[in-house]
Image (cartoon, rainbow, N blue to C red; front, top):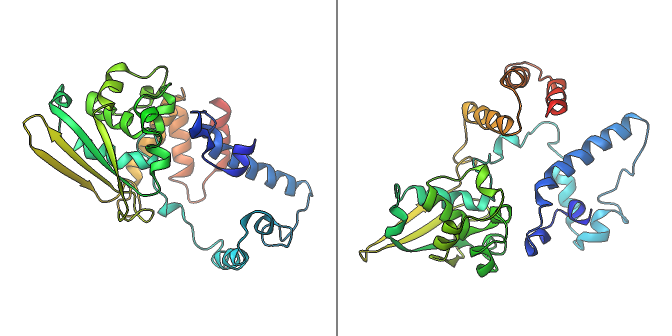
Length: 274
């Protein structure tokens, strides 16, 4: 419960799986709040900025309430979803540009064996999520823990040529773990993060040559947005992984994407089938 309430990263210390439920827990709380309001329950109007509100108890920031108030000025008129970064891979968002950088090496089958070392330049403040402690990141205890492992996910792309949902089920792949020992990292203080999610990767080949790959921002971010086709394809892939039939996928796509007024009841029906 503490993890859901705070939205923190303590799960990383032991590789706990609660992170997968965090976003859903927040959404569930929002739905519950709406239902309570519908039932006549009232709440404090200054729950955030009041003297005994959230900011006063936890933020220890005298200016927090004022900033919060200014953020409400465009409430209901500006929608931030269009600026959100869609995720193309089932792992930590910080890792996506590094996977893309490895893909640009064009290794092909067995090509990873020609690599002596891969050095990842990690944007400062990302390291505690994807790189520390390094020894555990190189040898995660479970495959699902590897979702936040820079060396393991980089090795996945190098060895298998792709990163899929099934790669994070069961036990870590011994071949991937072995290659992860060739991956190193360095801090990157002037990367542009958090405005961007970039990656810089240096490959050292067995012939002594070196190759530097830069990814300016993660695919799917505001500077590299997805079109509707890719978003729908990602939705269908997720549905297929959950065992949803194609007819239900089509129904929800039609109700949400092609309707003047989205039919949220279609989403509820889909959730009931999943």
